[in-house]
Length: 188
Image: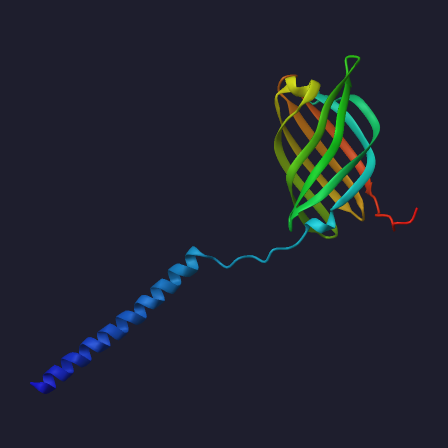
């Protein structure tokens, strides 16, 4: 009887041992499926950060048309790209204004808080979009979706800013080319 009890105890222990091993394997497989290995973050934002001085051309594109009406050409402006995270920048175009129908329409600052930056073969690209609500005499335009696409290579940037203005049934397209400004040494 004692021998049978010993065999029974050995059988129960071995079943528990094998069941525990199988259970651990199942949990490890599920854990791997739920949390795939994270990709290494590539720091790209510092490559484009800076203040750029350049020229912008402004045109208007009526909804449903591909014809661009040039309303500004070679306007000199600063655009600033500042770092938000390792892979994102904030883009600011200060004091943006248009001259329409013999009037200056002041939009204020065009700011897109987060543009994703990617780098490939020596060229950094950035894209972003955001809805903007303007103030001042442009407040009547309401909320306008803004998209930005651009590149930076060797300290030069080219970008396109599209501001869709539903109230005017047009898109304002800003094409910008600029050169990164080098910080001064502190000497006058």
